[in-house]
Figure 1 (cartoon, rainbow, N blue to C red):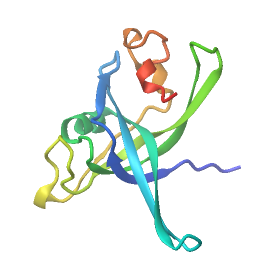
Figure 2 (cartoon, rainbow, N blue to C red):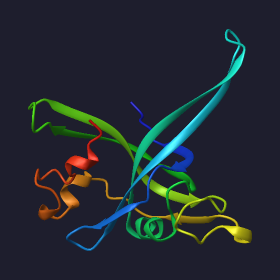
Figure 3 (tube, rainbow, N blue to C red):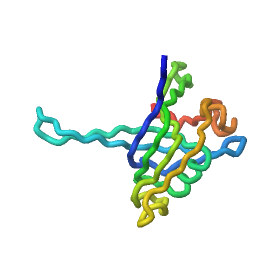
Figure 4 (cartoon, one colour):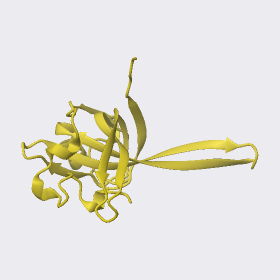
Length: 159
């Protein structure tokens, strides 16, 4: 049976990128993306809007570029793949899981209102690609970056 795992998102950053480095020196950036959807609700006779929040992991040079040029509020296009992260909750002992996007291609859009500055103005958009590792994010972090050994701190878990 054939499989296909591709995600294309355009949205605004919800926070400044957090860039860390693996023990091997590879940059990893965690960004939050807010993606808006608007539609007209005929039953209530009004325009409606919903926002979806997505966590995105960028690797290598595009992670470094995100850390340098992107900031909260900046518009960006992300192409990537879905990845399921699973862990055991420290307090309850229950298994938890979360879908995230592993970015494989990032395009900075417009001038944006982000604190990162560059890339906007009359120069158009910038496009950065990288090869994201196919294995889990967990195995790439330093052991001292998280007390749980999962690669993510408690602040990274949304619940």
